Amino acid sequence: MTTAVAPSTSRRDRRTTGRETIGRLLLERREMLILFCRVAGLDPFPHNPKVQEVLQEFCQVLVDYVAAAHFSLYERIINGEERRQAVIVLAHDLYQRIEACTETAIVFNDKYDCADQCQDVTHLNADLSELGEALATRVELEDRLIKEIIGDQPL
Image (cartoon, rainbow, N blue to C red; front, side, top):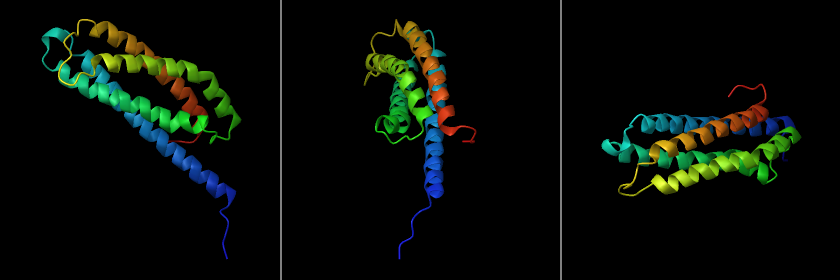
């Protein structure tokens, strides 16, 4: 005899998994922001030998964070796995703006993720400023979506 899983148990399991996924995303975001500050703190860039090392680490974490956000939050919604209409509507409203922030991060990564060394870091300060603005926007938008997903539940 098989027993069916009660709907409330299934819903609880999905929400627990969702909170865990969001928790991992927030840890990735925190690591990325810490490294962003480390890179920015190395100015003047052309005269600091640690720039390449920290910049490479930052680019890797930046790409990991952007990918984690996509696969943990947005893909679930895009694939129709989200059932709550308020989450779907908000995600739809925010997605283009979040995608624009993602594009800024990818452009930055393509420019500065140099296997050996980036020869030209003369525009790094301006590029970091532009990226910082995009990341601030993305964090704000993601937080709105996360709040809608988790409601009043603690992470």
